[in-house]
Image 1: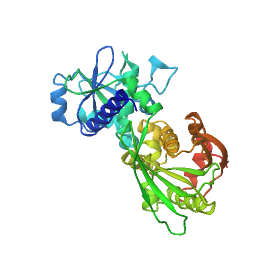
Image 2: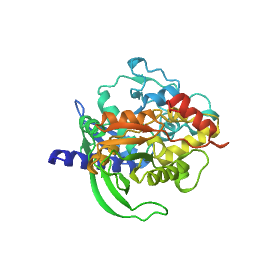
Image 3: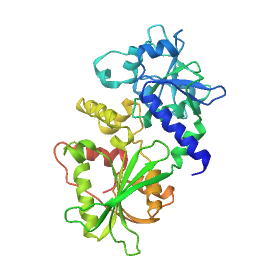
Length: 357
């Protein structure tokens, strides 16, 4: 990366850390705007950064839709951020209740909530994107400028999102039961600092390797959850790659389709109340699937791979890699049997997310 890219990446990583810690960050606009995460901001911090209680509430378009809050100012883009006027009753606890859908099904409507005009929608979108990268609910206090806070630009956030670089950090041999010689390679993303892993199995013999993109799933991969098919998918992908004589498995830090572990568990709780995977993500304020595959493409290029046979049923993985410059010479189906706990989940992936047979 160029020197400016390194500086921009460091600022973005510091901004993500600040949001997680409940501290304000600044986003460049006509005049810089400051935001604080609703989920992590303490009452004491809000008293400091917003002593006059002028702060307004910024939420995602998806969360606004879940609250039945009409986004009349941007009907052409329902996912556009929504800014809510500060009412006398809207304190930290009320803002968290608006942001967190955990009690949506147990309470009456919240409000009234009045949308306001957004002076700089690009900055709002970037701020909510940083909250997502921090694994937080997409809800922020928009407060008066905080000159001492970390400053990032919406342009840099968007550029890093579309074309993140990765740094190869370490590699080592990793003997696996019943597998050809395997190396494990650790990468670090330039935008969020997340560490992703590649398992390089066997030898490719100069042909396009068999490649699996696997999104991290703590509940399925480690604990054997029956709510999804992630654990069996991971094991079977390694078996298939080994039987083929070699290939690459990318283990990507994209828990919960990119919404993070805590938010995935919130989605699980909503699914217990009858929502499917897609509707639970939307009620939380996220898109159906927040993942992108730019990191995966950058990892493959660093490994010298620009053509792959992709082991997947997900058309978004095919289009995501192709749009990032990786050629897909073949899609290899990857199906797992259902169980009583994940049958609806798998049906939803086919019906609403377009997963292939």
